[in-house]
Image (tube, rainbow, N blue to C red):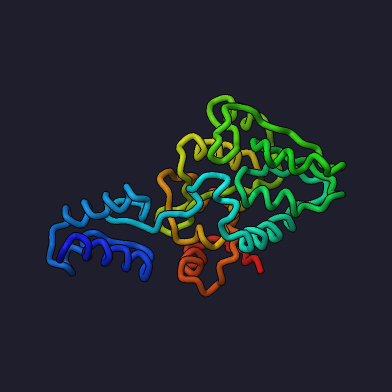
Length: 252
């Protein structure tokens, strides 16, 4: 089989089955695992898959730049945002992560809602400036422009000195095997710091993130309360998450 044919075969497997297991492909095609791993390295370098131990998973489209991500799955993000905003109680304290889905949450919160919002995202804070009864706390640090959020040691230290009833956390990948992932190590550390300061943490996961993976792990399943997604309950990844005991809130 030619290299181009192997590449098409691997991409087809990712599309149909949601993963590639290198040893299985090697056995099916009668080639070495090294050849499969080399092909996967090439595909990963082009941004067409995310390599993991033993093979590869679909790469998340949410690792694109912030401006580009605003055009990805806007309807799904609005559905997730509406379900997430309904969890915010009057007089409650919310930690709201950055990202385009979190921005949709901020824009969905009732204009007259009395609450406290803690965020490390300047765009989130700006979106809530005209909410007269929302108290805002902006955590500072080095601005990671890719996601328009503060990260790094100063931001993590600031996060360790707050507490909240609810944390709404964004990720770029949600997969039963690799868990919750994102594309930057410092951003992953900041997300862990934020989640640790809330009584409940729900992950914002519009359907394009379901079944995909990024490079850095954020949290294990047992550290979150649940996942909010517009993916249907019959989605095989959603079904698997439910089997693992993860609470899945379907955003209609």
